[in-house]
Every structure is written in structure tokens, then in C-alpha cells.
Length: 545
Image (cartoon, rainbow, N blue to C red; front, side, top):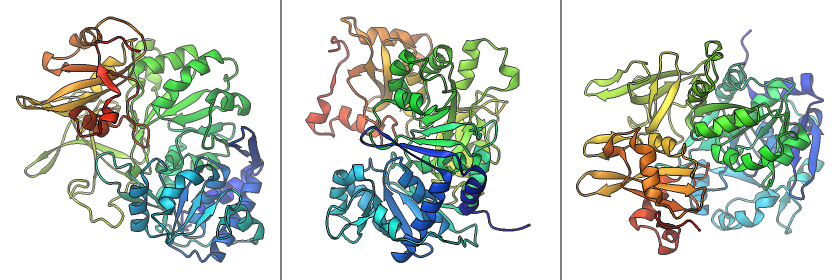
């Protein structure tokens, strides 16, 4: 039977088969809001009617400026299922960037989380062409209240998406290496991505799971978890805008699977370790955004009994591309070898094709999967974009034979495990040779004195670029950190790889999705930022205060 693959099918399946499963949200006052899928279903239908009454038509872009809450989840379904396009805004971008994005997207409405009203105001001043809808109570006569919209709306609505290739979502890249670019997702692409993500050797979610997406819902559709969780019938726990204790949330709700960037799990580890018994329900943590240090993988698995699974992907990929789990043949390996494998970005999930390539005068030459050959990582799949919103495809991003150029430099071994070596734009070119900043960072993180590390290339008259390491230290000492950290690296890397400087800082700047912001670090170190920003950087030989 041939009929369109749409998100309405996910919603209907969740309602018919898993109506008694729950969505729990941590509210700003510290209490938990809880309702079941059946209630969510009825509210989504009311919301679809309310949006229609507001004049929303098929293809209209509807923005959200919101945290991970039940109301945002309702919008995740109502907007696409009535034929409009969900556009989650990254609340960590500047008002100027967001205003530019919203103008390009031509958003018709914007929904604003009650916790972000003050933060939203500078953006509102730049987009006065849009009237926001607030999750909380009205603050002015002209404001529109989300809950009032629902209370006044009819409860009956019939989904009627006939073209599975119509757009359902619009997400913008974080703009780490330039201006943010829009990526359209279709009903078909997200439906297929959901099926692939729920494979046993990928997210592997089941009806028995309780899923905590800490990854923001504005970041590449929260890695697809809002759709994957409900299709599987898992309970969902949403942390809201201002969660203070991941341990409390896990303990109070019985979370079994959680997902977030490595910095979240590094910060949460001390509390989780103290409350090991309370958080015993947690069995798996999905990590993405950047690599989790092997030492941190070890403490989670060894001390807490929590499986760590690396995922890699991109906004352009909806976003999951690879997932790292051990194969059956690996089960009898020593723990250290298991953790080494787990530290890789994993193998392509079903439906995703990868290749390593190098550019030649005749196009791209494919490279072998031997775990040693380094090349540009390229991909294609039924849920990978073949262009950017309102931007013509360019050879910089897409090949002539239909592959996405990810911008990552990697190796792939014979078993298909990907190891990201660096971003193409983050490779340090020194004296004509390439230096991997990621390899240096990974080695630095093995030292007990190092909590975080970022390595960047600083312009150098003689060599072109030279590496400089910026670290957050865990220990106060009068010892010379430069000598200590240089010694940490010297046995693993060629002499010319060793950073010229090791700079100890209180905090490493982060991008809007939690990665080390190397562009900002570089600007601070080279003096292109105001002195107040540079004041956080001090000589590594000093005692850390």
C-alpha cells in the first residue's frame, strides 16, 4: 500500500497504542507537570485548530523560542501535522542573528516560553512585524496567551498531509564556521530518520524506557528524540529552561535513557556519583556534539554502570549519522580496549552511507577504510539535505555526484567505526604539515589536572600557524603547567605538534550548542576582542586561583 509517510502517523500511533504513557516537565518553580499521551493528543488537536484560526496555512513557517517543555512538544506535532513548518529558534544566538534568520525564513508567528520573556525582548524589538504568542499569562492587552488559544479552540481536527515530501521543519546550523544556514526537513525524511534512530543498535528505545532529552529542542530537533520516543511509546521527561539538578530529575522520574553534550555529563558527574543509588534507573547516556573524553566514559561505565553511546551527525542530517556501540565480538576485550572503541563516533546507522574522500583535479577520489587513512568525511541518506534554504548548492558543501561534504576530517576502520580527526577548518597547518587539534585535546584530557581543553592555531610568521592549548585545570598547584602538559603530549606526538603555549583559564567559551568556540578563543588570543574578554586568559605558569 502506498500512502504518505508523515508525522501524523507517529502521533496517531502514540495515541492509539501508548495513550497511557506520560510526558513530565520540570516547571520553573521546581514542581513536575505530568500528563499522558492521550491528553497531549487532544491538546495538539486543539492547537492545530487554534493555529488555523490565527490564519496559519500550509507551508507557513512558525517559530518557537522555547525550552524543553510539554508546550514545545505540542508545537512539535501540531505545526507539521496541519501542514505548516516548525522553526525552532536557537535561544543562544544573538538577537541580530535571530532577526536575520527569521526574516529569511519569513516566519508568520513566534511562540515564546514564559521563562524567556525578558531574553526575548531585544529580539522582539527587531522583529516588530511579528506578534508573539506567550506560553505564560498575557502581560499586555495586545499579547496572545497559548493556554487561552487552546481553551477557546475546537477539539476535533483531521490531519490531511498528502505529500510526504512537504516540509515539516526548518533548523538553522549553529554558524560555528560562518553565518547560520537553514535546513528543511520533510515529513518523509523525519519519519525515516525516526525509524532508523529506533533500531536496536541505535537509540534502541522501547515502551519501557523513560527518556530525558537534555539536548535542547532547538538543536536539530533534539536529535529526533521527541519523535523517536513517542513512536516507541517511551515516557518523556523534559527539563524545562532552568534545571538545577539532573540527579534529582533522574531520581524523581526514573529516567533510563538521557541525551546531551559531553560538557553536561562532565558537570553532572560529581553529583551523580554521590547519588549512585538514587539514579540507578539510568542505563544509557547518548552523547553528541563533540567527543566525550575516554576517561569520562570510563568513570560513567565503571563507577555508575551507565553505558555511554557516542552519536555523530549534523543539522543537515536530521541529524543522526553514526552511533557507537560495541559489537558482539568486542564483549571479551579488556575494558580499556572497549572504552577506546566507544570513544569513536561509531558506525553508520541503517540508511546512512559514508565515504572518505580526497579532492583531485578530476573530482573526489575515495579512500580506504583501514583506520589509518585520513580523508574528508562525506555522506548521503534519505534524510540528508541536498541544499540549504534559499541558498543555491555550492561545491563547498555538496559534491557533483550527490554527497554532503560534512567538513569533518576522519578515519574509518574496516568495521565501519568513524574516528573524527578534526574539522577541516580547525586543522592546524604548520610548516606545510597538518596538526589535529582534536587529537591533542583528547590527549590533554587524559591528564588528571585537565578538566577541559581546546587547541587552536595561532598565526605564525615562520610556520604559518602554531598550536596553542587553552585548558581548564582541576588542581591548584605552583608547578609549571606548561611543563606538565608538554610532558603529557611529548610521548604521543611529533615534536612540531606540541603546542607553543599552554594557557590556563577559568572557562572555555562555548558555542550555542555547547561545543568549544574556537573562533572566539582565537579572537581572544589574537587581540581582536575587547580587553575585558581577554582578561580571563592568564599565564599558565601561575598558580590557579
